[in-house]
Length: 452
Image (cartoon, rainbow, N blue to C red):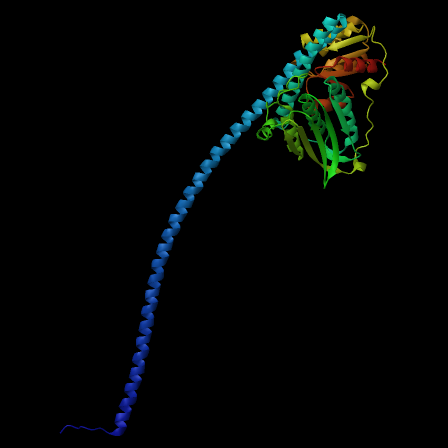
């Protein structure tokens, strides 16, 4: 007979074991589920890692290609930059060389004209000579402007910024431009102030020269005024004229090369380089140039400069101007001229002989020493070109002549080289320098001073 009931103790024991098995089963199931989740997560992460790796590879490839493309572009730009710099350097070098060579015949023409002027006594001849001289001055101004632009482009013209007093500069400009304004029937007022600015002496002078020359050139009636005043933390130099004015659409263009206006009836139009040099020099110096103009009423150019302490202006002792010195006559003076340019040598000799000098010409130092042996005596003065043939220097020629004579004979250098290096070389040798085209009055004054 089947047993249908159990002992209560056994039933309780079975229930406890069943509950225990359920807990164990639940724990096992939970562990299995967690393990499955981790496996799924790991697989998901693995898939994600693979996808990210693929994206990284793709992006790396794209970046590498972009970098290669940039490198190729940079190489092309670098080559283009090198070519542009080479072309600019060649252009500047050629322009400097050509300008230097052009100054040689111009110097000969100026000297020949001066010699001719002393021979001709009629009024008609004098008028013709003045006309030719004005043409040569215009050509000289063009060549100087081209040379300055070429030097700036070649990086050969570097500013020497220092404290400068404006009053002496304004006085020099008044003396320089007053006769020109009077000849054109214009008034010229230059009002100075006891202030100093921070600038380069040569460049600032050239800027103001060009602004004044431009104002006088294009003004038919009335006059020109130049003055300076403080404006905030700047010194403003202002040049105003009563000329025809400049249309708004042309006010930027006139600062470009070879842009020019209509000159006054008594003057020829310039070459359109003056204001270009003003802008270029001002940019190099960090000065600002502004223009305000009304057609029919005139123009005003304003140059903004950084102020400086007037007490810091160099207290150099300046030599008196040649025109302020006392000179004697040149009659009978023995002059040794060392010049390799035949036309320049002939013109200079003709001018000196016209002043009563006894001139011996020679193209080199070696030939000069031979001439000295033939002359049997020392010259009263030596005039030498700075750059002679075959790389020879007039400085060494003068040194050789002095060594040969055992005498510190008075000497001067003439040159068409406007570089700072040339000026320093002559200065270190203690020699006066005249720039070509030589101004006869300046030449005569300096020669008289040396002989005295």
